[in-house]
Amino acid sequence: MGILLGIASGAAMLPYSVIKEANPPELGGSATGVINFINFTFSALLGPVFGSRLVQEPSDADASALANYQAGFAPLLYGIAIALALTFFLKETGPAARKTDALE
Image (tube, rainbow, N blue to C red; front, side):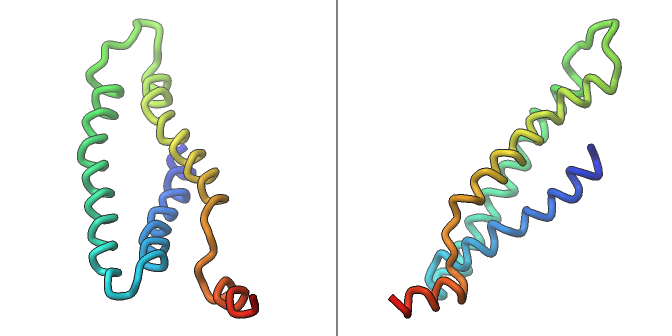
């Protein structure tokens, strides 16, 4: 699980690329600042949520620590699955898309 989340966390750089390409060059810095603010705000707000699920909630006497961690990290896997699905809706804005637009 840890290795999978570590590999998938490399996708955190994708929003920065997308936000730079989707905005005019003069707004690139502001757009990057906004995505950075959103990223760290969600990290700060969701940290205690995961902590409470893993540490503070009383566990059943029969439940193992592994089951608690699996339940705590399950939303992260759902988020990764949603992010993967949403990538299919991204519009190409790079050089290949500009060539196609120039031909039309």
